[in-house]
Length: 160
Image (cartoon, rainbow, N blue to C red; front, side):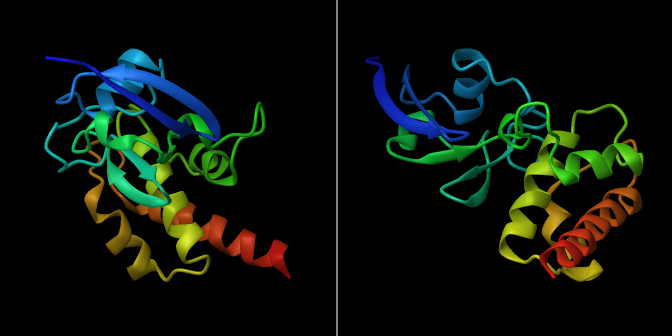
């Protein structure tokens, strides 16, 4: 099987990689680009642990093919922080104890940021609906939802 050459932008940086036509974006990110924050929880798009953004849209990296990423802009958990400066969502997840084992946390953070980018003032119901594709076995969801609500409120105050 011949490999496919792909040029894309990952977390704001241009990248090039070769991949098999059947290789998932998740495998490319983890095995070829060394971005191991996205996790494989299910391999079928049911758990959200591998959530990334592709051209600004939330997606499961386990369901996307690396070969389809030509010209795309991909955002991963590694792109959330700016150097040593954590994103407000990352800070709030720590403060609110909205994480435990860490398998689902990257996906929740990427999904939460995608929500706030699209809707900076979501209701609790909207947050719960948006995050319904992300599963957590350790924390439950209340702390996660509360953390997202608090960041949204803080961002709203800062924007004033």
